[in-house]
Image (cartoon, rainbow, N blue to C red; front, side, top):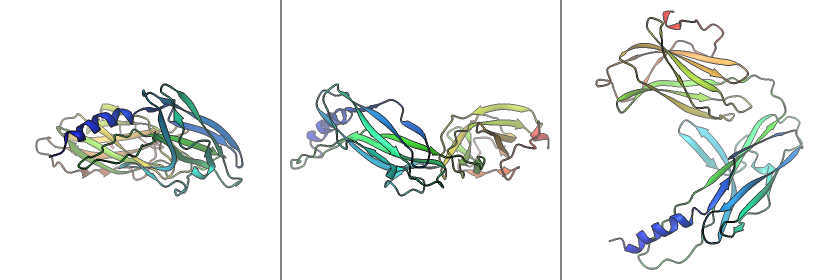
Length: 288
């Protein structure tokens, strides 16, 4: 039987590990020239009732359809972790104290650098190690903050070219979901506004489904999901992306069966447009 001490540790350690709080935005962006530098600060706050130490370290950050991952700093092709230095690794904060963590980012003197470079500064409570008694289990609930440090270098002459891939219809509970992956093969991050316009087989606009804006770093991708509260039938999805500089999109045709008979496994859907392009998108695409 697990001793009662296990549950006491779970109760006591979770609040203690939540003392360190990061205030402000979790993404810091700087425009730099090769060899240029900038300074910033991250506000740390001890929201607990006892002295707490923060553990500060760096990591690389990558987005894929399966979610974010963190890796060793400096390993990603566009990592700027080696450009960043900060003044403290384990600052100690008194109860209620707020203290700035100062950092400096310096770009290398390489005129060939251009586009977006990034990494994260991780902030979490430092764990105080103590010996365990026999049959004692320690459980720690750790709240980590990942502050993204982004550097934009030079000018990018190549226009943004977001790419869509892996469209499919999948079943989630009692509804269908349109799933599509959005990637950024360019040199600068994207934050496109994206929506799906759904047409029936007669070319009538049925509904428009917006998505939340998300940053997509170069070489990264995300998965977007759109709930389809539609009756069975044939449809065309016109996916529209606005990067701020240009419009992109793609058309996909698909059929929905009665949800009670639909295969719960994801099913691919036919693409009516191979590459994202809105240059010749018809006003009523479902009639084509």
